[in-house]
Image (tube, rainbow, N blue to C red):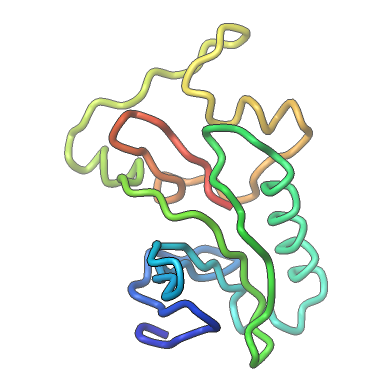
Length: 149
């Protein structure tokens, strides 16, 4: 996948993978900006329930406008039929990377008092991510935490 061009995007590096798919950083060759592609795993391509969950994930995240939720640009299929979500790329570290480096962790949110903001706003909208782990999401340099679709 690395080096492959999909429409106006060139895949640069693999960022990770989870139960639903693989995540890659890509370069937008027209706008000169980095983006992220999350591809549904090939083995789930014929699973209608998995495809519906993947689409619902993109719709739910794109319906929210919050500084702690990454921006979804589109959901689409490649010319060969591979379903993907394209989203904004944020420079930063995963929680897993921060823990491994012994960095301080963001304060835990206090119920009813706010906190980091991760997970607070989506819960009010009835949206819950199905894949939360220390390797998902990004902690940006200013301490801004982002939930990725």
